[in-house]
Image (tube, rainbow, N blue to C red; front, side, top):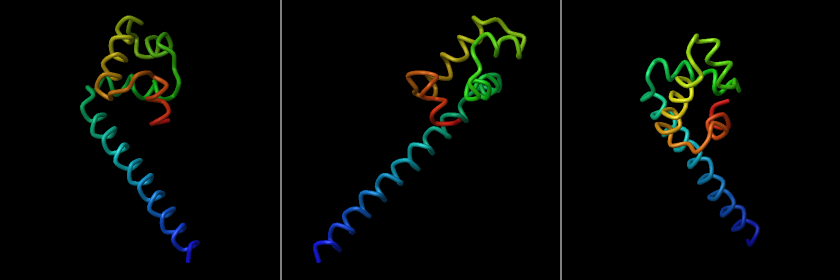
Amino acid sequence: MLQAHEDAIFSIIALNVVLDDVYKKKIWEENISRLTKREREVFLYLVKGYRNKEIADTLHLSEYTIKNHIDSILNKLDAKSRLEVIAKFA
């Protein structure tokens, strides 16, 4: 009886964790849709692990412009760092 109760509690906790992850992913996906076309381009290189200079060279932009795009991306995705973005989308 106790085992069945523990199993039920574990199942509820596991379901809450899965639902929480699904909800968070949905929020992130909605936020990605707010990115401009150029920010989405930068985002794709960002999640591949490119450095600012590499992104700038690839897109023929200045590093300063890339930094501004990344700051905007982090703001729109409510992320604290590029590593947080990479962890969610890589």
